[in-house]
Length: 91
Image (cartoon, rainbow, N blue to C red; front, top):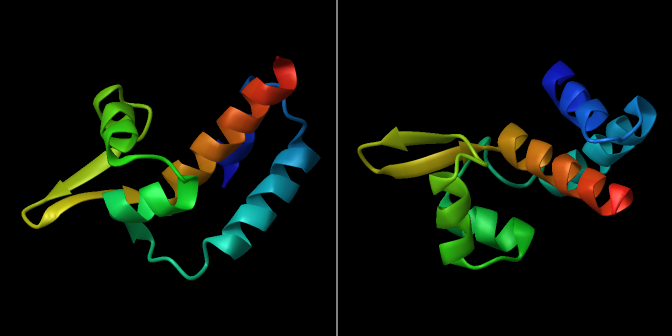
């Protein structure tokens, strides 16, 4: 939780706004498991599989590798959303 706020502050989003963003997206993501598949990330962010893979390869998202596939924590996706909103506001 604290890391999300620090990430938000680093990207020009006030703490209270970061908390609001986190609350809104946490509610929307509540139906998803804590560890997301690539296809679930595609669905949440409305992006292609190749974009998700590129983000993983560039370490924009931290992945967990298991014998049955790659997973990304919901927290990582929330941090990415907060970070991208911060970029939009500063542009």
